Amino acid sequence: MSMKLASRSGITRRRCLLGRVSRPRRGSAGFTVTELVVAAAILALLLAGIYQVLSSGWETYAVGDAKADMQQNARLIMEVVEGDLRLIGYGYPTDPALINPLPRVTGASGTLITFWADLNGVTQVLAANAAAGATTLSIANAKGFKATGSPKDTVYLINGGTFESRTLSSSNTTATPNTLTLAAGTTNAYPQGSLVGRPRQVSYSYNAGQQKLYRDEGDGTGANVAAENVTAFQLRYFDSADAEISTAAGVELGSTDATTKAAALNRIRRIRVTLTVQASKMTRPSGLQTYQVTSDVRPRNL
Image (cartoon, rainbow, N blue to C red; front, side, top):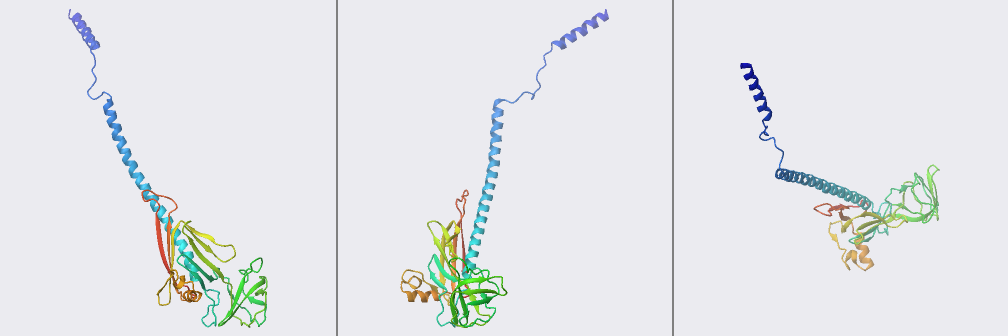
């Protein structure tokens, strides 16, 4: 009797267990649509913030990189201009002892300067005496002189207060020492050590419309672009007392009177160069950046 009751009790319990419906535990259900939308909005805000930080950092880098590149270009341009201006008169008969010294600076305005100089260091000295009427000059190195083609170089023989110029006919760079042959004999005699100068007429000019600075080395190839993206180029001139020489129309360097202008050109002892360049690429938020550099140059031979 007791076994039957136990058996029925077990069966009943199993039936109850099999018929029991399990309920989901608290917190085990999926996300609702509202929760997903809120999560997506929060994620979007986070990504937007990260993008802003990265974008700001990149813009700062781009601006700094463009500025550094622009400043470097400006300094390189200025170094070339400075180097050329310092050589004004080199290899040219400019000695104060000369009875009629030639003008070293032949033109000067606010945006243009023309002068005589040996920019490439071709100038030599005589390796041997040259008698009056000589057509051959002995020098250490004749490789830089242009004695073929057209135009051929003009050389200046300078000895203290005496000088003259002659056009070259040919050169010999294999002889020891090298030699230069003149198209005509010299008028005067020149001792060993006399200067054999080979200056050329050099010029700098600025075109505001093109925003370009031009440089003419006087080698017959004409003016070439020295710098682009130049928004301003200014030249100012000063005498030995540091008084500014005017470039205004009708006054001193701007005078139409040849004598007045020549006297003003001869007074130049210092040149102030101001150069403003513009970045080649636009950067946000500053746009096209500009950079200005100024230098005072005292030519060694003025």
